[in-house]
Image 1: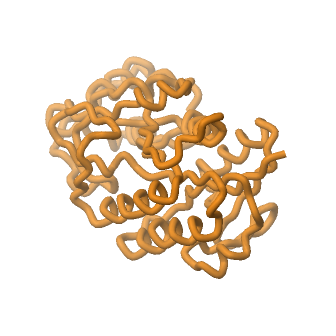
Image 2: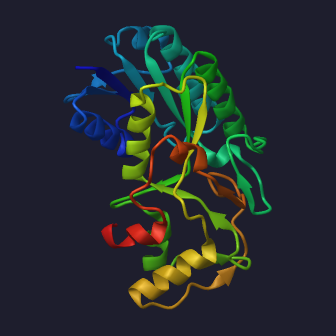
Image 3: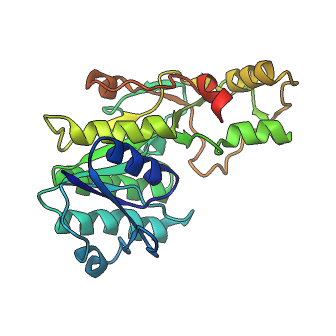
Length: 267
């Protein structure tokens, strides 16, 4: 039985653990505080990472706790450096973010597109990616994660907080938690491991903000939210792009939920 360690067993990490266990792996989660079935591990501390057991594969999907540049540097950049040092022979996958693409004109972006994030956090993610790919690991650039009990768009729509920014034409890129977890499993279990490569993990239907809220209004029989100014303080930054998942799909992965509106009934 192969062994995988998932660093950061939160909303996504717990689902990754479940998918690996269903696939017959010995899957163990590691969190900052440990407890229960989880190993205690501070991924930013080389000594703590050094105490982790051996593994055939490692997933870094720990959260920065909504911190800024310092937290990103510790958790992601130093965390990746520590994991690369501790597991030189394991298959390593780092869950980065599609926020490293800062395009604002509705472009279709692939893994070859320019990455010039306008925020310090995005620049740190790129540094962490380089550490991982340079060591032969894989980077998964995740779009915005949603899933059961967790959808900012749906919550704001149902609570009446939703606002359609400008003309609503800005594209929103998302990925269902279950599809993201299966993408991680898929990439780490390919017969020919794609070491050193980057993959976008997004669904197949980038919708405009207007299309999202029109769909929700139709599904729930409610009025469309009001129009208003754009929110320039979004955590992931203000961008307008369509993230392509073509490269990942060419490796045999397909999303169970090709579009956000396909999944709304189960949220």
